[in-house]
Image 1 (cartoon, rainbow, N blue to C red):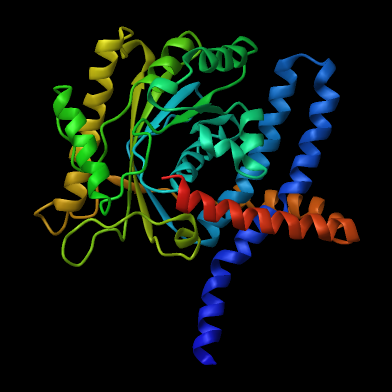
Image 2 (image 1 turned 45 degrees about the horizontal axis):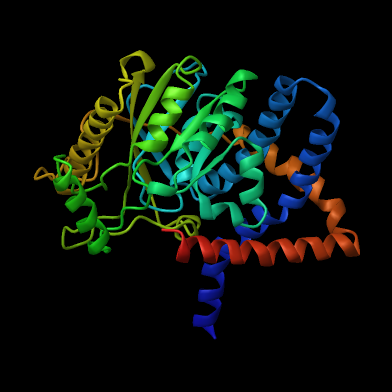
Length: 365
């Protein structure tokens, strides 16, 4: 009985925040839908302004749980600009919590509402979120020969032409790096060898299409590319081997004590346009990531293991940045829960959210 109580209490560390985040989704979408309807006769610029503000409120609530609730320490290497910029965010990809890291950096620039994602096409079927991410400016893409360059350009041009602020998140590897999936790593390294590229050991060989289309389409709108390298502390095994990064449930269960984020800003003028040179540039950036991660996991100096080279600075997130959003969304959700139909919506959202999480973890590597 005691063991059952311990297991139940542990599971609440995930289900409690997950239920609240998913339970507030109907109220949020109702608020957004009302604004979308009212703004249909207004200039697109005005729609995006409030849409970004609404998105900021919801994502601030998400960060309350992923940062303040978990107590994770964020350590940043490099200087994040204080002013907002129109940027593309390029990062290594390890787990389902990676998209939260982009939010963590964006909120520190007061640019959380501007975050939009390039996502795999299958994710558009995720309940609630799949559809809304597209409405907020997200782009769904297919791999290899099925990649629709024309559709991506059209979506990005439509937003830049109306002046929508851009914090576009792209994971060029296309799938997660998991040290236990040896066949995926081997295939990636074989492709690099075939193309005459350097072999990477702690990331996968980056795919260039989505990144190149984004840079070329929005070049006149962008200020920079943020080159981000992320390492989750606690992913080095006792044998010295790298372990998989935490999933979102594991993260919410407070199994990651510290996140190390290496930040490098690249001015948009420094990025080559020609596809062949852009491919080389992108691979060079991932070679840098690979060296950083090699130092993080394999340093021979005990004082430097599990940290990036250079001076890392802890960056705590104050409750004033996140708690008001929890209170606002909670206040919007409470009236729904006081009605029978509201309770039905809440339960249905919880069920859909459970299915969403299970599908994401198991079928979208």
